[in-house]
Length: 210
Image (cartoon, rainbow, N blue to C red; front, top):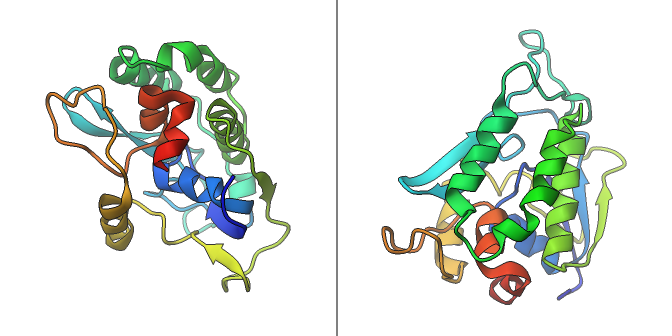
């Protein structure tokens, strides 16, 4: 673990490399559980590198009434459509030929196959496993209440790390260190991907490039 800062993050499904990098450099990482679910965010999507280029994998959540806001802690995953199988096949197609994915494939798929009822539970189990596999140690906590303002002394990344934020994408492109990617022969280095990409290709040594 490096640094001593505290960081505040929204929950994320197979979070981006930058998300995990900020946890790696923090003394304590807080995951927000009192904000509202928002579509088109990393709360329910991730980006991987497939044979044809970057692909977004989106998991469905149970519909709620129009104009009704649902807290992240109350948001339920929708398993009425076979998205788990679709995502597992996408991960396999993208990373089965990588150096490390075959070794932790079952550990991650067992989380998906267990079908946690709530989105927050699913995301936290995935995050904890990714940190374990990469040997990243951090005091990981859920928030105890909600504050719209950034808490004093805490790096608030809840809105910044977002697929809809061009400033975040620009920062990732500038600061992410290149590493070998499965389809490097087809594409130049692709930044802003899920942490599963660098972990699959670099294993626990990936922390040297965070």
